[in-house]
Length: 291
Ligand code: PAF
Image 1: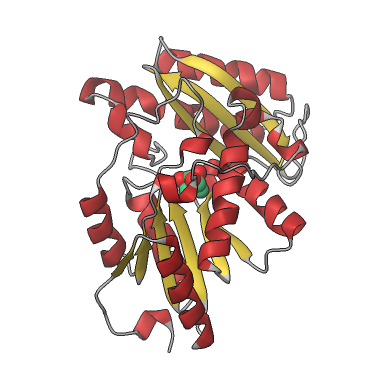
Image 2: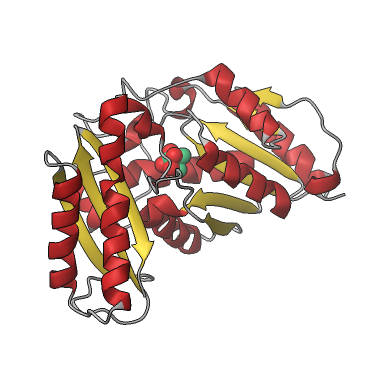
């Protein structure tokens, strides 16, 4: 029976690690393929597209909701990170997930917790440089969720491209028998990448957040017109961002090899542009494969 034609059943809500481990063991014993979609909740259409994708590629989908303290820096938005558990469960069920796993922070990180997973080189640039320890928190929780839920496939979004690359690396390095599947970024009709953090904008600020997409689109157009210099493209992207949001604070605009994340100066094949920009104090990231 494929996920597509299975009968609609009530979603199972699991909160304990032991309960989730037991259920995963039973699913595996029945010969079913598990698809995992890890989230931090406050779901938008982007997350739901990951669940639908997982549902097409597996028999049983487990979606997790856990706002992971280990991936937030001391001055980041952990305390005000938006939450809506009831709304999330309804959305997760409607997107076709069979199980939602909502562990407690004290169970994931008990008082004597002392083991972290650290992926080295690939976390030293971009987000890793701007947010020390962020990826250590991500790989630790994802490894732990892999061990608890034991999926065959795990789906992550392309918007957090470096995160996806780091998780792929960790999965290979630690020998998890799991396929990491990367789903395309979902965008609002004006191009803004969907993100739980978009919620922080007032109506009057919201339209300026599209600056990141305009800049990426400009890069793509310049390359189409024959431009090869990343310095010239970056200059133009900066101008586009500042024209759209004069108070924007650009953290980085980076051109890197798509596979290794090594910096590139001249546009060739396999180049991705990633950027992080604060728009009215909200830190947004986005990216686009340029060539
Ligand atoms: O992308 C996210 O929402 C988080 O980084 C993840 C993968 C759920 C780990 O906490």
